[in-house]
Image 1 (spheres, one colour):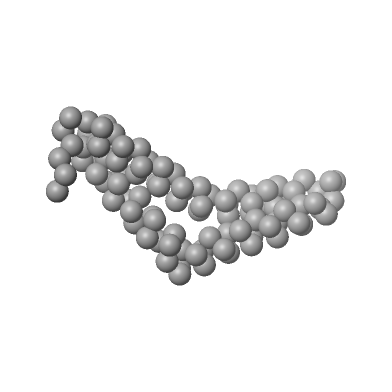
Image 2 (tube, rainbow, N blue to C red):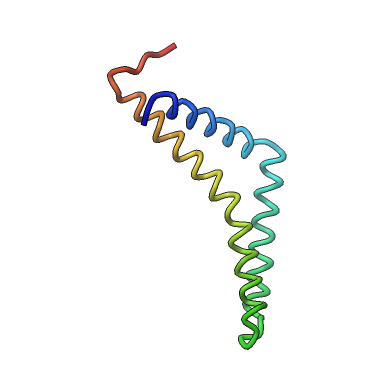
Length: 94
């Protein structure tokens, strides 16, 4: 991976961290968790003879879980890129 790509990953991770830490990010993550918990509760009581209902609830859980997963992925990639740059001989601090 080239330095430009790693710098982009670091910037995106910083943006994700800022978003997660801010009020909008906190709201989005809270809503995702509420959706997941609600769908799990419905899934527990869903009719086992209703595969469409079960699939719909599973899809809700996956969809709401994707947002935090994508953000965590950005953070992990940014940390990894930063560690790679810092450990390389070409790393120059500003």
